[in-house]
Every structure is written in C-alpha cells, then in structure tokens.
Length: 610
Image: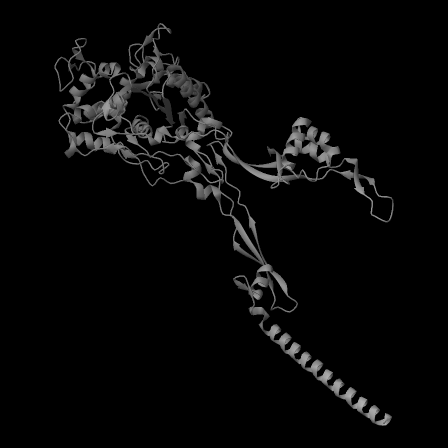
C-alpha cells in the first residue's frame, strides 16, 4: 500500500513539473517573439507626428545662429552718423541672491538700497518671470557699473541658512549652517542698440530702426539689405553611418556682416544748417522748416528738417517728425523760379538784361495790375524787387513749348532717385493741359508745376556749372547713371548770376541774407499755401530763399523753406511785427547757417563788399 502511494505521488509530481516546464517554455517563446518584433519595428513607432528614429535624428541635430552686425552710416569725412553699440544689461535672479549681499549689490549698481529691495520683493511676489529682473540696461563696456560688479563677484561673505534637523538623529529644532559664499543670481547679458550720435539733427534723413532692429525710414529703411547683412546659420548633425560615428558641422547660411554706407553729408555743415532752421522755426512760430545745401558737383552736404525727434529716445515717436520735407513735399516755389524765366529769355535773345533795357510795367497782363510804383524796369530791378508783372512781361515773349522744355531739362516733375521710397517727384503738366494763364503763372513759380526742395536746389546748380546741371548725389559709391544736362549757355548764366547779386544787397529783397565780406547771389520767394484746394488769403504762406556763394564759381548752393511763419519782425525795429515774406524769415536762416560754414572754410577768400 505504501509502495503504491509513493509511486502515485512520484507520478503526480512528474506530471506537474512537466506542465510548469511547458508554461515557462512557451512564455519565454512569446516574450522572445514580442521582443524581436519590437526591435524590428521600434524605428517606426509614432512619437507625436514623427517616428522615434526621426526624433532621435533630430535630437542629434543642432543649429547655431550667428547675428550679423549692422553696418554704420558715415558722413563724407568718416564721422559716424549711425552705429550699433555692443552693450550689457544686468539680469538678476531674485530667488538666488543672498540677502547679505543686497547692500553691496545696490552700491555696485549705483541705485538706492531701498529701491533694489523693493524691486526684488515685488518680483518674488510674482509666480511667473520671478527669476528674471533686468535691473540695469544699455551699459557701455567701459561703464563703471560693470567694473563694480566684477569686483563684487570676487567678494565672499558669510551666508547662513537655517534648516530643520532630521528626525531621530538629534533633538528636533532649527540648525544654522554658515558658509563663506560669492554672490549668486547676478547675470551679465550682451545687448545691442542702434545709436545716433547727431540725435535729432539728422533724424528725418537717417531715419531709425524699429524694435526688431529693422530699418523703418530714411537711409536706414532704404538701404536695409545693405546695412543689415545676413545672419549666419550652421548645423551640427551626427553621422551614424560612419564607423565610430562623428558630428558633422555644415554651413547652411554664410554669415555676412552689414556694409557701412558713406553719405555725402558733412556733419559740421549739417549741424549749422539744423541749428539755424530750428532757431528760425521757433522764433517765427512756423509750422516747420527745411533746408538743403549742395556743392557745385551736386553732392548734398546738408539736409535738415525741423521739428525732428531724437531717435535715441525710444519713448518718443511722432511720425511727422521723421518726415523728410525736402524730398517728400510737393510745393509751389514762388518767385525763386524768376531767374530761370530770365535765363531762358536771355538765351532766346528776347532780352539783353542790360542797364539800358527797360521793361514796361504800366500795362495790365491777365490778373496782374500795375502797382503805380514802377513804370520802366530793368531785368536787374525786376529780380531785385521780385516784381511779378515785370517777370510776366518777359514771359509773354516766350512760347509755352520753350518754357515746358526748359523746365523739363531742369528736372522738374522727374524723380531724383535719392531715397525713392519717400521721394515725391512733383509735377510738370504738359502744354496741352495749360490754360491761358499757365505760362504766366509758371514764370513766377505757380501754375502747372509743383516741385520738391531738392529739385529746386538742383536747378540752381546751373550757376555753378556754366549752364548745366549734374545729378544729385547722397550716397557715396552709388552710380546715378546720369550725366550733366546742358540747359543754358555759359554767358547767360554768368549774366543772370551777376544780377542776382543785387538781390542780396541793401536795396534787394534778400538784403537780410547779406554776410559781411562775401559776395552772395540769391532769390527770395513767397507762395500762398493751398488749403482744401484753395489758396489761403489769411496769411498761410511758405517763404523761401535760394542763395549761392561766391557769385562766381559758387561752392555752396542753399535752399531754405519755412512753412507758415506767423511772427516776423522789421530789421530796423526788432519789436515791430510785419508780414512774413521770404526776405524777413527764410533769408535770415541762410545768413545764420552760411556765416558759420564760411567762417570754417578757408578756401573762400573774403572780399570787401561795396
């Protein structure tokens, strides 16, 4: 019986063992197959929108960007007009700064300790962004604050921290742990800022960059691709197919720093021009003022507008104060066009412009009536007194085709190509649209034409180029693809230039532009402003003065414009208010600016003016 039981137990144990063995075997086989399948398909698993293999490749791939440095803007002598400064800013992590360092940190940052404490406390009370507190920014590399922080980083102070004892080791309670430590949580970060050393004096011309560092107006906007350059991009990827594997560095986009741009502007001449315009606008309570100065070759030495904002002050922005009135505004230039009427008539043999030639101004022409003051006038007297009826009398001897063709050669109605994005070329209507009075009004700066101030200045270059005009230049090294245009003959321009000398005399309309010791020629102008499509008769005027010095072989040509000056005063009585004209407003700007320019230019010899 016992033997049978033993055999039965032995058999049962053997059978259960085999069963367990089979279960283990098949479990292992299933696991092995599952693992093998997983190994074969793991690279195809979805990891979001990509496979794990693709994600792995991405994690082994990095890109590195290098910021291109923006080019500088320079004047003709290499003086900086716009540049990018490398600056530092101090970024604090209030959660890391040890309280014992607060006093020394405040002293290093040159701010009151209480103010620093308050800012840190306020930052710590926030949930988001509490680890970033920009406490100082726009620090030059030579700032004493940076030197202070460098010294502070070497200082060690005793920093104590309290914590609870671990249960079961000692009696429960607070334990103070003190160590000598350096300050924590103070980070210096590199920053850049566009800086304009000449502040507001060049703002409408140079323009500004926006908060993204992209040129938004003026030269900054027009030449953005040249100044900005191209950021560099490099990629670092892992090559898994090469034995041993390695990281491959590739240049995706080459780094190209921005190019410098040199203008024909002279920073000193620009300063004198801007200062004179600013003073006159404020004194005469004008809406705005602008001026441009050229040399004989057509290079722009100064281009000033006022009011203007300081582009360094990011808290102030008025779009109108960045408007370049010299290039952007269409105007009727008034009597400043009279010399060209006389030049054309002289060229065509319609006048002799001599002292014995008398122009009859006793008969009405169109809407212009005799003033009863003058009867027979020379061309010199007509220009000297800026006489409309005398000018129209001369224009009656010219054909409208001759006048249109000449004004067209002078460049009116055609773009100068200086800053195309902001330039308004003006208009010069063709003769078929002229009315009966168009030729007459054109002769003294109204009618079928409008121009900008730069075009007007260019036309006066005929007096410096023997009757021809060159293209204007603003950016050095940029080809204009234009040549000089011959408009009048040399004899005519020399003759009219000598007559314009009389305008800037005690008896001329431009007498307030006189500068002792220098021979100056010029022409005043006053034009009623168009308001709501009608000429304003209540005093809203633009006043002009165009002058060049010296009379023979001029070196400087300057055009001044004031918009709606409201307070003008007599030369013989500074307290006596009189009507604002080009003679008592714009001419004064010429004198004040040109006096400083000429005193700095030893190449022009002083003469004794009679």
